[in-house]
Image 1 (cartoon, rainbow, N blue to C red):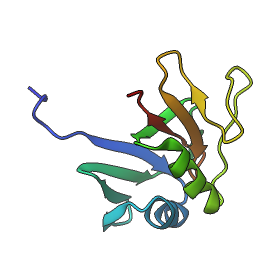
Image 2 (cartoon, one colour):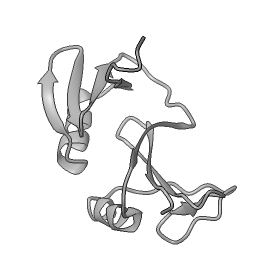
Image 3 (cartoon, helix red, strand yellow):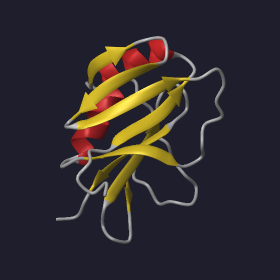
Length: 125
């Protein structure tokens, strides 16, 4: 029934102005609507709705991610915009914070201004 419908992703924010700057200016997503309840962005055909909430405890796992073709370039570009990449004691990450998974996918994690854990993934060729 929903296999032909387009997915819309939702994540929370307690600070819409910080989220707007982060997703629009740093990540480069296109803001398509804004009201007292949410910001909505378009990202390569997928809608991302960032819903304003009064309080929020971020989850300790990834809530949103992007597949990229060259993770090293994207990581270095985001670092130039003061994005800090997460490191995890249980993973063998390189100096840039990139982990090579058992499937050979390369993955790196960073947080948005609300502490939502985001990821970049470069799938193996």
